[in-house]
Length: 540
Ligand code: NA7
Image (cartoon, rainbow, N blue to C red; front, top):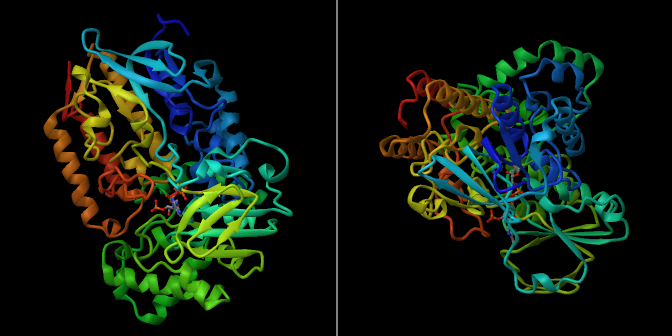
């Protein structure tokens, strides 16, 4: 790249969103460049190659819907595909549409500054090189900026260690998921920790799990997809996508509109049992709708899941440690598991409750808790992310008058539609904070985000507009609306990355980071705004 490179649009990130954004804008005749930190496409599915990583969306609902060729030519082997398969899928798409020719890999955007006089952005990469574009579109992912715990002595560990989001791309030994003869420690028990723990427990000599807070996990009930089902899924692909697009979360699962109190105990139990035995998120997103809004309804499902955990874990004391006591089922992200609870019945797996015996320090041979030291050969950090805003916070973004985005959002993000924030014209945040795509079967909503932005960029070209940003009022109203929606749910009753409250992100304000109005409402609002010539935006 030379300092004179100029594009119509620069896209930051070559994951599912960035790849499709590149494709759509290029199809419209725009000159687009994508900068990607990694050395391959796929974003989340490129980086998170830890053992056990897989979908908890049904594979054929997670796929791109915009190309019949892709649908016809790609075959998913499992209902919930493992990460290597998804990575292959995204590489297949990149090959098929020759996306790589416009992607510059190993290139992290360090800085983006708005040039008011020329109504364009200047982007600076890590190596100091620069490029310019009228539009900048962040496709940096809501869960890409990983965080390590601030534990004294962390760097003194003499064995091998990694965060799950930076698993070494190795092909032998523990890097390729053979932990035979090794003592492994895992810190963190979110959706990632659960996946990695249940996998490592199969081969490790000893696995010690360091748990701060348990989560309400539920069975994934994965299985292979046979030829008959594959044929059905391909033939009915559009109907399947339409079904997803009509649901709150963009999944096949739709809330049951009855209240949990509407049915008697026997029928309710049978319903819960059925959902618990079915594949995927049905137990959460196909349950009675009021489990997410009414504390009494939530308590009923919470008790059911607790009973299940007690049934599955042999040692009652361990079972109690695995049952959350501070939040109800579904108020944090539900990790989907396969024999996760049964791991703790194995002799090689030990659970340490960090609330009773906190970690004091990491030492060269392992982890020193307040009561004793646990020596390990490999230490895995499944400690989560600076979610939703983290990737943006790590880029030095300066808008009109040099205002820094990180300062503007110091008390939490404020946006219009989760797509733009005033003072930062022509910058769009795909799957950004308060955007409908953040609480969604993500590709379903990514497609909506990308198509909306592409339509808008095309509209601006057609009408000779140079600059767009929201009105302050539109931004304020949206931010209030997002909060009001969240307050109608039980999400604010729990601490988690949904609320921006994580032990490793102490500087973030407690605030709902997603959009709780459901994907169809979000899309309807975006469509309405577009139909009214981008109501709430100022176009120049
Ligand atoms: P999560 O869901 O944020 O889970 C990480 C967990 O690790 C979380 O409970 C953290 O507590 C915990 N954590 C962080 N630091 C420590 C230390 N020092 N000791 C013990 N536990 C710690 O991230 P995941 O990667 O599991 O999942 C992220 C999303 O990716 C997931 O929801 C899916 O959508 C895919 P905290 O909550 O920060 O207090």
